[in-house]
Image 1: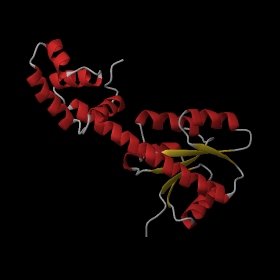
Image 2: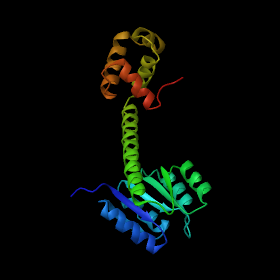
Image 3: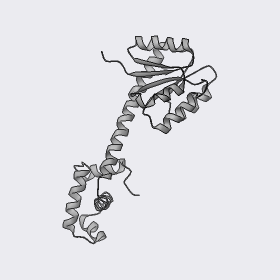
Image 4: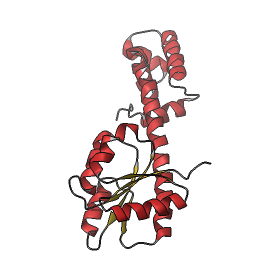
Length: 205
């Protein structure tokens, strides 16, 4: 049976871990428990896409430090920080570092479940977006230096003739390069090529 997604609970309080495990397992999530952020980070290379629910105050690596390390590793995980009363400034810092939300204890079970659902949807869209950006960057990287120059000319609005003049080659040769650019970039029109170049950050001001 399909689950609602992977959830990784990080909390040094065993009772809290057990209670979250029971709640999230009952809600059809695939749950993994970690008593420290370090143990979670040790397994990071094998961790599948999902949502991390972490306490903000823990011995060793706390929730804020965990977020800093996840940011460095570019892990595409949604993170929800659980805070105690009065830890709101820490939670705000956590959100600046990429946490999608925070929840103050004590909290309602339904609220956490809804929050995880929303975080997974948001992170999934972000992961798809990142994969698409990398794919487009790979298309740009596949262009030869001359094809790259032709693409830059096209997206700058120059005609084949003008690009040919810039590089002292024939307009006919530019047409060949242009066709190669459109094929390699998988662009069906000039407007799509402009959009792809913008997405890849290959558009000069």
